[in-house]
Image (cartoon, rainbow, N blue to C red):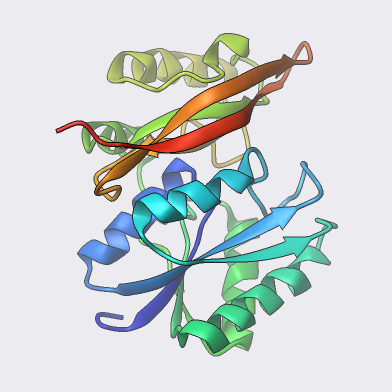
Length: 233
C-alpha cells in the first residue's frame, strides 16, 4: 500500500495513534482520519470515552477528520460505520483502511468485511503484537497517553488520568498476571488518550478541566475542557 491513500479508523487512543505512525513509516499516504461517535458507551465496536477529543488530536496531527454518528446498537452500528467509510472514500479517494486492532477478532473481522464490501484494503500494522513488548515500545517511543476509563478487576480509580511510565507498566504487568486482564486493554479493560507523541509536530493536548467518576468497580475520566498548546523545544 505504499503511496496509496489510506483512511485511518481513529479514536485518539494509543493503538490507533501508534498504528497511524507505523503506516506512515511504511510509506502509506494517510489522507484522513475516520472517527465514529456512538450514543452507546458500551459499544462492542467503538471507543467512546472522550471521543470528541479526536477533533483536537486531528488538528495536532494536521489531518482532516471524517466523523460518523451511530446509536451504537450491536451489529446495527456496522451499517453506520460502513456509510461513514463510504463517505471518506468519496471525499478523499481512499484505497485502504488503517486500524489499530491488536487481538480483537470481533472488531477485525467486521472491519475486514465492511472494507471488502467497499472495495478497500485493510491495514492493521500492530495486529498480533506481543502485548507487553508493544506497551513498552509505545512508552519508549514517547507516546504520552493517559487512562480515561478503567473497567476490570485489578484497576482502581488511581489509574484514571495516569500517564503510563515504564514503572507503571511493571506494576500493570503484575496486576495483569494476577487478575488475568489484557495488558494492552484490547478487551475494553481501559481506554486511553494520547496527549503528545512524535506525530504531533507543533501542538500537544493540555487538559484544563476534568472530572473523575467512580462507581465502585469501574470509572471514567471525563474531560470537560482541553486545548492545544505549543510543544516545548
